[in-house]
Structure formats: C-alpha cells, structure tokens
Length: 421
Image (spheres, rainbow, N blue to C red):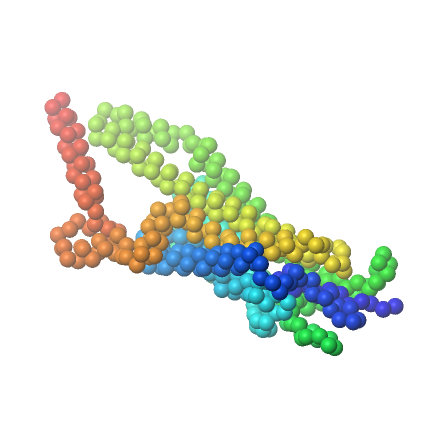
C-alpha cells in the first residue's frame, strides 16, 4: 500500500505537486511579457510607493508636532508603523515572488520565515489597535467623567506596547514552522519554495484509496487565531461604535442642552451671553467628536473590506476537509487579488486620516512641500516680536486678539445696559 507525497502550498498561494517522475509547479508562468503583466507591475509598484510615502508622512507629522500628540493620534501612529512594516516585509516580498521570480523562491530562508510572521504580526497589531481606538472612544463618549483618569498618553503607550508583544507572540509559530525547501530531480533544474513544516498525521482514506496527511495543529492554530484575533474583535468594535453612534446621533441626555438654554433665558444679560457661549462651545465639541468617530468608522470599514477576502482564503486553504486535493482553478487568481486588496489597505489609511482631519492634511502637505508648519513659523516670529500675544499652544493669530476684544466689548455693552436700567 503506497502513499503518494502530498502537495505543499507556498507562501504565494501556488503549490507543488510531487510524483515519482518529477514535479509540476501549478503556476501560470509565461515567458512573454504582456501589457497586462506590465500594468500589474506598475499598479503594484505605485501602491507600494504611495503606501510607504503616506504612512511615513503620518509618522513624521505626529512626531514633529506636539499639537497632534493625542491618544487617538498615537493609535493612528501605531497603525502607520504597522502599515510601513507591511510594505517593508510583506508587499515587496510578495511582489518579487509573484511577478519577478515566479517559479522559484530566491529570497532565502530568512525572508521565508519572516514573510508569514510579519504578515500575521502586523495584521494582529492593526486589529488590536482598531479595537483599542473603539474602546478609547467608547469610554470618552459614554463615560466622559471617567475619561480624564482612564485615557492618558502614558496608558496609551503601555497599551501599544502590549499590542506589539501580543502580536509577536501570536505569530511566533509561523517562524518556527516556515521552511525553505529545495527540490531537484534528475534532468531538471533546482527549484526552491517557501512552505510550512507543521507536524502531520498520516492516515489511510478508503474514499480515495490513498494515504492522506492531515495537519490538525495547523488547523487549530489558524482557527483560533482568525476567530479570536479577527472576527471577535470586529464584533467588539461594531458593538462599541453602535453605542457611540446611538449616543451622539440618536440619544440626547434630558436637560443636557436645556439647562444651558434655561440659564441663557435668565434675567442677567451676562448669564444669557454665557449660555450662548456654552451652547456654541458644546456644539463645536460635539462636531469634533462626530468627526473623529466618522474617521474611525471609515478606517474600520476599509480594514474589513480589504482584509476579509484574504482571511476567507486562508480559512478555506487551511481548514478545508479535502486538503489532500489540489486547489481549485480559481483559487490562485482569487488569492492574488485578495492579497493585493489586503496590502492596499496600507494606502487607504493615510488617505482617510487626511480626509477627515484637517490638521493631518495640513501637516502632511507642509511636510511634502518642505515648509515649516504654521505653529513653527509663528514661534519663529514670536521670538523676533516679544510684545506679541502668544496663546498657550504657541500659535500667534490675530483672530485670537480680535475674539478677545469682541468679548470685552460685548461684556461692556451688557454692563452698560444693566446700569441704564
């Protein structure tokens, strides 16, 4: 009773099918370069370049400007770092394997072990960071009295450190079980491929009359990782944002704004002005909260759309019952598309940051133009002008002085009317 050797899946989604006479690489390799191939190379290269440029701009903008060092921006900084790692350790490796080398893995044993490890680490870090953002906003909006004590920069830094430690621990098995294989048969060229070496169990299958090797440890690992570190956090985030949206857009606390209006309707003209200012400031604060929540929701939506197809292909390839059979014809094409879509998320994120945050947009544009920011330029002017009025954030603006003068004049007007009575 002879057992045939199983097929081995490579990191790029293709597979080797071994037989007694030789091997066949199931890869649609073509020696001729078509316009389609050139277009794919151009698009992939453009996505890599723009992803690296956009995320580096986000990192530099947050690190060089104190006004942007908030807890939310710290999490976005962490997302940008994870996206940079994806570009450096995943995107170009996949690009070289699929579009340049094709039939053989030529990046060495080190990159073979690092590629899958980096992909799992960065994916887990992104998921946990998005979950931390949702929890941060959940506490800040639904429990504002506890937000000041629980949401601090020091605690945020500790959470980010825990995220990377946990992500690294989750991905460690992929370093252990990733292996570079080299195969050479008589009369054929030597071929290397990056595969996995998970412990397997051989059993006889009466249905196909062959010896089949199953990998229960690998199936268990991917099932637990995908459920607990992808689907479950997404459920938590959707629940948190549902409560947040209900709080900001649907529910209104009784008396929250009515008290301000009643105070504004008091006999004192000064208190009326104070009530108007309270309503105005509260409205601006709520608009700012809603803008942050919109940005976070769009980041989460983009993450789900970009990464869900790849997770579906991973689950299908790792947990299917007929693992002894070759992959369907559509799997290689769909897997390549899903991988490209997942990597494109690194390009989408900086676009969302800039689209919903004017501070991000201005900082990134000024970095690309190599010009000092408004804050930096104002500080330079304030050093030359010691009599300038400088607010706490260091930004000298004539509008601040005009607002102060207008407030004083309004108070004087109310005081004049009271004295006339």
